Image (cartoon, one colour):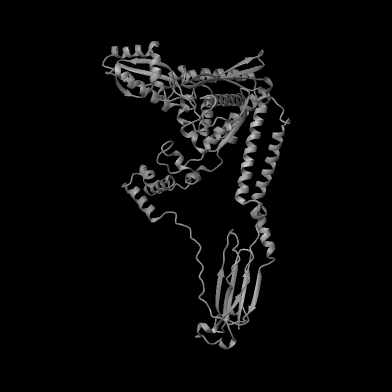
Length: 624
């Protein structure tokens, strides 16, 4: 006698065809009262796929025919029998079947409706804020938009639960896992069993071809810098370069992440020969109340207390009515150095460039480099027969170094027509001055020159800052002014402006090296209102920022710019976003200066750093 065991679940169909034989192992005899000859298993794994449609082909199950042949091990195929089962599994209903339209079309309609009405309501909300219209006063169109937003939100919320609901619907169709025992009743020929295709296996992380490339990079036959162009895959190039570096140095890079970064976004723009990326935590200080607007300031830093201290300064400024920032100047500089045969000849060019009659002609040549570049001034300085020419121009929302360099090159080519004996030594002669502390930037300014001020009330000084106005004024004079003068500081008449500037620069995709001149700052504190309140100001002549180009287009940095409302180029007024970012940097520095000086004057600096900026880990264990 033969038997069939069929096991059915919502996602699996398993069939056991058992043919009796007393000669098989005991483990199978425990399956049925009589021992088994063969077990044929057919499993249909359906991981999240829709159910198969009903089949018109009968289901054939194989078994032995009679007990008289149970000892005949050499029987022909004709001696076997089959049972024809005309039943087919009914399809499992899906929750999306209740929709009147196809699922993809319904989803598209509700997604479009949701984002359109959300944009409309946000736009109307912004207009009401500008026109001081109460938000609870709504028009018929706004009411319809609100209803549509709620309806689309409810649908989308329900849509993501369809699979969850469907699992309950499918389970309700099958009360339990069914085991059915069927007796053999008919005799048919036994067809050839069907073998199921194996599940796909995961691909190896590194193919043989990639392994050969790694070996070539290690040996030097393939330059590491050429991997992107040869492979056409920036992520794979970074992975191969990383593996080659580990093999050459013998040092693993386990802590340096590789995945989760768009390497195409930095190709030819931000970084060459990448092997990963460094993670820096980003904190938020604010709200910073500046020029009537509130800003949450992102700060990327690894220094404990910095964000907390700046946040306290923002709180004090907010409680005192906010701060005011004024843009004094906006112009990026570049200063090439040229050489003549004599100092007299160099002076001729100096007089020519500084003559106002020639400025318009030079401006036309310079401004051809960009639709945003506008030449503002030319300043010259002579050292023997060498002439240093400092060009200043506006650059829109870009930081502008490349823009001004192109304009300078145009002018130099133009000047060589009338001054053929002029030898261009370098496009940059350090009279700019870029990425170096310099008196010319401190006096003349570079980038955005900003002054930011606020009046902190006596009550806020006492309750929020935990100090007094006289103590702050005295400390500022002795530390930031006298102390910096004794140290011979250049542009460093402040407590820690570079801390805030660096943190905001890294978070928003600015050039961290330009923190040097961007941190030029003088902090002033004076008692006002009969000595009760504190007037504090920071003057920063060289804030070099942009909202387009460079690192600003990276996803994380772009998100931080968007948080401040200065992402990309301003469509209404070219350069407005970059100028606003500069004022936010100055306002953040004002908050940081106020809080740190208060901590020092009240004797809380060491205590706070021991609490928030001290590592509790055993460094001897880490180093070993």
